Length: 623
Image 1 (cartoon, one colour):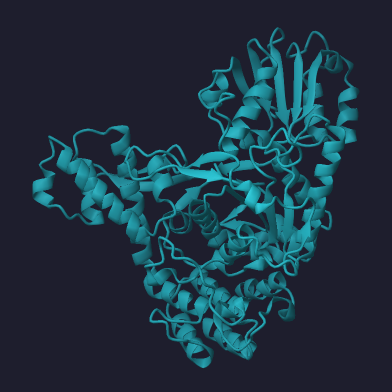
Image 2: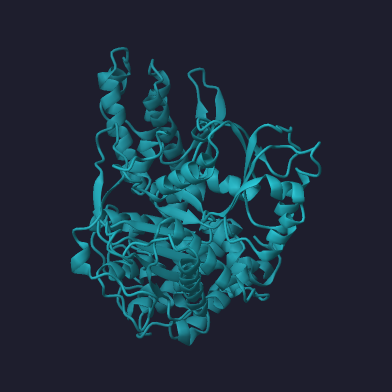
């Protein structure tokens, strides 16, 4: 049995472990002997997000191949197809069995990652040889990507355009609801639903989710969900909060100081693979690639920490390692207090490169590059202005609004800024001031000062399309500036976070307050209506399922958090931002409640601006 799969006594603890167990047991485990696994591109992305090639191959899988490519025949071997249920997929599978002489495989096991449409089923029926060889034909709900143990997405970068673009896809919200149902089926959940009342899309997604789950229950008698019976009472029924990107247009734009968000904003990171530069002992610079994922315990520990804290922790670890290294004379030369540049040099001079040292060296290089990029792009002053715009307060807590705030912004815009930074700053100002009395006049003055091209102005105006009519987005008190208008005239109050001591992190994403209210049963029903099954009684759920969150770190600095009670799900149509991931993790740690957060796709500030720019133009003409 794979080391990834838990036994009955040790049930899967995370979403990723649940996917691993489901795939290895229900799909790969369907054929006992040696077999071939054939997947399309979508299924490959889904599976590779949760398992490695080694995990698959140790289950007696001879080959893992792509459906779209020419493949060598293995007529005596079972084949497992895992793919999206499309007509093209069905035709490709049928092509593998054109005749008995040309049949590529023996017994056939077909798994579709979502519900199979009738036309796909009919296409397969038209191939008698294939039908005669089919031993398994099953729909398996795995139509999502597990980016992290508690983070998922649908790999749907087109979502914002389909929801808010000029050529809207009216069927898209229902489609998202069905895909969200796939996640819930995998988790054995029929959650109590809360949705953004100001969003028709959120309502449609919620309705589709609920109806899809009801239909699935009717046609799958063996399917069970937590909270529905007295047998599976490890935990109470989950609760899900469904939003669209219009609920908070500002947070994805902000320059963040936390490690994961900063790296994904400033460095070359693609789906967890980061490219970074390093210099060897001879002074030769080379580019390397590293994986920022949950197999790296150091990354898990530090990804949501302020970059200043990250550097401080790296410094402490470096000092510990240097002092404990028998061959390191560097400690005497450098002293006990190392800066980030000295740390990078220190790693290169240490004699042993164990796995721990290699990971530590990687994070020294990445943290150094984050700070180098931050300094080179002069982001300190710019990010302080962003914080002032967002909160309506400067770092001393003094109110900054109206003409004074405009002067601060226009002074920055008149500087020699890269066009991406200029557009981003103006978008932050636009979003925060659009619902403030006199805001339109201030915004026009800022646009004039910014000297935007027509395509850049289009990006800014598209935020109006995303936010909706002003009367829909405005807070109840329009006297104050900045994001305070979203919170009824006052800045949102939150419990102190690990980053709360830093003046550059005054902005708190709106999701955090919504999720806090959901977890405390105080989320207002008039703004976030309910749908579907009733939520669990909070007092009853306290003593239920106990699960662990977090990796036990070899560095001895992070302990597992015992999770209990209700599982909370969050879905954001139009993209989920890295600050929102951090908010979910912080509340999971604080409240000892499991939180699984996701969206149509993961966004950083650059991709978010591209998405907004595409709302009424082709993507090729964007920033």
